[in-house]
Length: 358
Image (cartoon, rainbow, N blue to C red; front, side, top):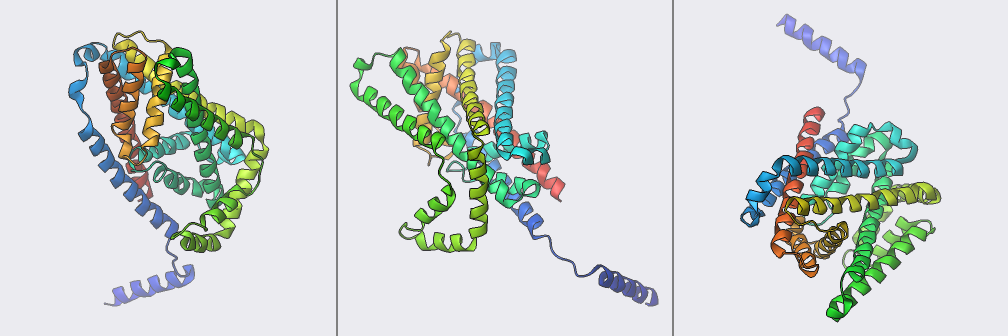
């Protein structure tokens, strides 16, 4: 009994000397959020595998070329994720030195993986990126860099669609389908104008004005207004970071070019797949198929993982260009298999992160 009392006395004295323990709220929140992202990710990967119709793939031809197309596609996308990580590194500026590139690469892959399995794009991966980057660069910088990257990522998509519309009028006879040609013309003009507005705009306080505009929305306006009042300093910090990035136009345009280059690299995937399938289509055809699939998939953004919508867009484009629709189906499903692999890798990285936190 005396020994226990002495041990208790020593512990009390040590606790008094060290002061009261403060719970690490941020660390606990990160662990909880990581578990949630992991659970959603695993469920998403399972759904992607379940929805995959592998019976429509020309397996004999693919198995024969498997030693070539599997490593080629994985290496290609490893490079594409590297470009995404590099463009985000540019947005961080000098603060990018605080984050080792291999960690930035891991965060990038996990971010895209989470976005792949969430029902609406950017509703999972971007909060995860902010969560991971906050310990390195602070909450304001993490939020600002993520918002800026998301905007430029969207602009790269818009530039891809504009390029696809241009390729459409170069490759196809517009008179064959007036309605389709009008749609592509309107899409091209709209996204070209939108891209120019964002790229050439020099207005400051973009986030503050956007949040103020959201407070006027019915039903949710009052809730957004309360959030704005509660987080005014954070919003102002995000605006300062974005304004700083806009003033450094060289970095700004370089980031856009990198993201646009990543889109063009994605078209190489379709180009390679069709060659493996025996269809020596030109790169411009693969670029048009990718832009159409991306446009259709994003137009139907509420579909989880764009299941079916992207494939349908690719098949339509392939048929318009005079190729066999079955090849479009096989190519789309192979792209989906590659996406599942990298999504599983990204979700698996969350497990490593969770174990390190614990």
